[in-house]
Image (cartoon, rainbow, N blue to C red):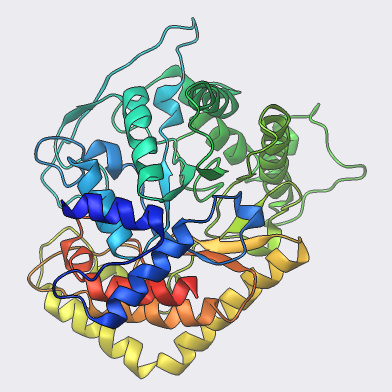
Length: 427
């Protein structure tokens, strides 16, 4: 029997047969994964046990070519199940699934790669991709391996410009047509949530929304240039005033969720965040996915950025040593900072009666395979932060790092580590 058939069969049966080289402890860990997978997927708002969710993006499709790490989707999903993950967050590419304004369907796109710098995520070569066809093939495979799916998007251009990026209702139309397409093909039953815009409202390619938000980033000028705009009674701009910006992005997200919920009442919707926790209005959000890293710490930020910078024009060993020295010298302060951040996120979720999680974290935002670098600190950060997150009942979907794709070989190949950390997450 092939190894991938073994993984499929044991996840279906909820039993385990020892593979050559597996210890009883490791076998027990896999058996636990299989029992978890035997459970019927439920929306993220109704999960009972924490999910070990893999941070995936658009690499699943943009590296699905002859020389790409996602060429064999069965092999990758088998590997993910073997490592103990029972969910993924992935970009559904709604900006390319959606039709043209005249209703025409574009089945194939070409994404250019214009340089040879190391590519952490996405396409490492110029390549063609077929988003509709890919979803029809890939999502059933996720279900076969008992990998539950959170759909997301950065709404990125990937070197391709379409009208949808500048269309006022573009985000809603793109998601509506994408979900209708999946519904038509009976592919929504393994979808546990839809993240409408990753790291809202900052890091995305929906140009129309960016422009509207930018107009409101300077409240005084916005009021001067838009005398007929609807404003609160007796509204007076203040210095460094972002009230209109905050109100606009909260209204946009909550109204979008409300509109989509009317059409797809059984789907959980939210937008994920990486900043602005105190200003977020979560009244319509099914969960809080808030991305946090040690990298976010203001005193640590530049040091980590230098160590993980892919513009390799220096000795990265020096930058890595500087980063590790700072982390170890300031360990108590940094752990206290992270503990406080996770406590605040959990409290925000509890206040709104929803669960929280983190599909991106915990050490650096960017890291890569290089002879001068190692992955030890990335793993250590995950171990620290998973323990901190597990203190809170609200944390119900937890990642291990930004690097759970097969192209990050230094992380991917440590199967034993993944099994152990995902076992802790799911416990």
